[in-house]
Length: 96
Image (cartoon, rainbow, N blue to C red):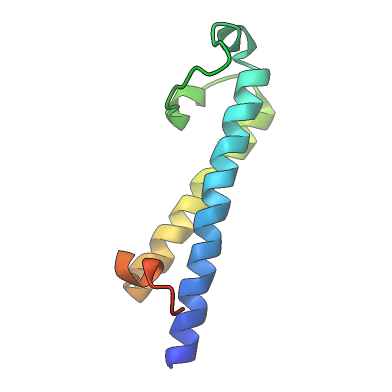
């Protein structure tokens, strides 16, 4: 059973990386599409912490599709973590 749990944790780690990259992609799509005008306000080197809720409710069907998929990914990750009782310690443990 240990090998099975290890594979679940490793899979969850992949989902975490995917989650982060996917969030970046959604922001990039939003800032070059629906929010392109807002994007002109930023200067090279500026930093801003985006919240994906800022990109919801637009008329951009592609952005809305990506957000729906992102939400499904989050739900699946939450279910996987809950069902298996995955802990932060396990996710940080390098022995997996």
